[in-house]
Image (cartoon, rainbow, N blue to C red; front, top):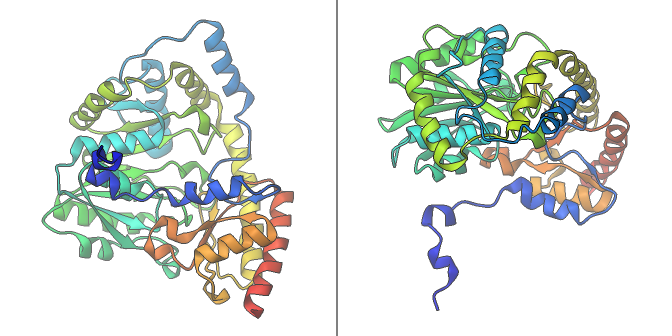
Length: 391
């Protein structure tokens, strides 16, 4: 009998397992671990949002919705995006509600890529970007971001990666895993490259509400960019709604229509209960988001200072809830550092190589963890780093 592996598609066989999930299979088998790993808020979803989901169940709101999502939610998204990001989208045909931002990204890539089309994106980056391109039969083309640039991506680096096969540019700011952000001037320089090479932009702005200093500038808000941008966003980070799995995409009508076709034949629609909760989040969740952001800011300041005091060079991220310190001075690889820290001190962080080859020499520390736990984790890390440097 043939091996089952013979039935697996070649482009799927070539995709590695997620470096995060593989590592956390090890974490879950180790009791008493303080996790600085999985990018999930430690806050419980605010009560008013949970109550909206409960009330939806009590009213028997358990049906399918439109493939595009509840019109009321799309109207709330339209209002919110116009106020927060200075871009206007018609709720009737320019907004698609999805099962998290991950589905929105997958839909966008499957809707626009032909086999062999190239997608330029910046690394270190979220673990799913390159595999998502491959699964859509595209070719991922990474551009390296460097700590001396605050992990921002430059227009020059993007343009150097563009070829006649390049169709899409993917951006994610604030960035997972580095917390890197972009200024308006930097984005305008990239917009010039986009116009020059007639590119489509997918902009993932899921961490935008967790910007600590200055204003977040949406790429879609730049002159002439809304018409060539698919704006991706969701509720997981700003409202601590990871398990609700609710996101959305906004963009030009033909592109949203194409994404909706893929969505209706695969996912059909997002959960109506999650959509009802999302309406409440947009309409009455701002205070909770502000409170969580302030806590993340305080934790960021503490963690980044602590890491630098340990001799692990770490830039101050202006957004997200991640720190991305260099561990090169310890003489360890990222994986050896993470495994050693887990084994010897029961603190979990993610090896930087999980986020692209240029992430080697770094680890990702998520500070969406209670402050008292962060203090213990930094004390334990200090012991481990001290031994590693002496060794």
